[in-house]
Image (tube, helix red, strand yellow):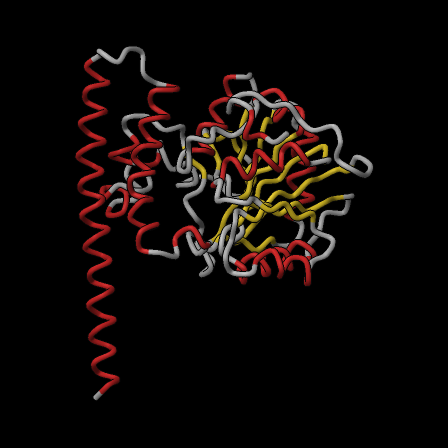
Length: 327
């Protein structure tokens, strides 16, 4: 029986996974990102934890030979294959059922694990019993810090969150600093976060058993939702800047097609509404609810327009480049 059977906030872990208990289960859900996944797996084996571990890859019905690559190059990996595309949350939930570790480490396929990252996250969780989750520092491929540690989403996030125009133009304004917690922080010391990115997050097994599955309705905000549920259970989510992972953001297979990129705009705003209804809304008839619905609709239309404009610009440049080569 798989996690598909259960409601998203419940969990019934499998007891029939073979082999002895181990310390860490590294869980990677992947879709059409064969080369990126290979680099990710190679980085784990190059910089493994000092304790026993397993790697579980959930291939979400990839069509690029991902499963064959894993079997041939990384036979030690426990490979789970979805017959149809189930998306991020359901794939990770399936791995939750099979994982044997005392700790679970969710990792994106477009990441590179750097030395000591896993050991430092494990040590931190052991030293802080109040920690329900810890996220690593994420770096872009140029070495800059990724905006991956934030306050929990609220209506102000639309104006001053990481995706807002105001934040892009004035990233250190005092309102954005309340949402993007890495700004003007001492990045040599851990600190409590609203939520950390699920691209690189480690959780004790007991927390997963208590809090339950990832919400399968969500693509975006799945990490914010899970960290909110961890906080509601009485635990803290931490950001550990001394553990570092490189995140090649959105280079995975989920953003490879035009249709998928456009659909992601809808999924982001739908996820925002689901999160709002689940954790913030008091009444669907309240004035704030009306403001949120109208605001999200306007923001969706504006974002969709910008995405289409960007796609048309890329297409036009590609056609111009092709014509120049043909001369």
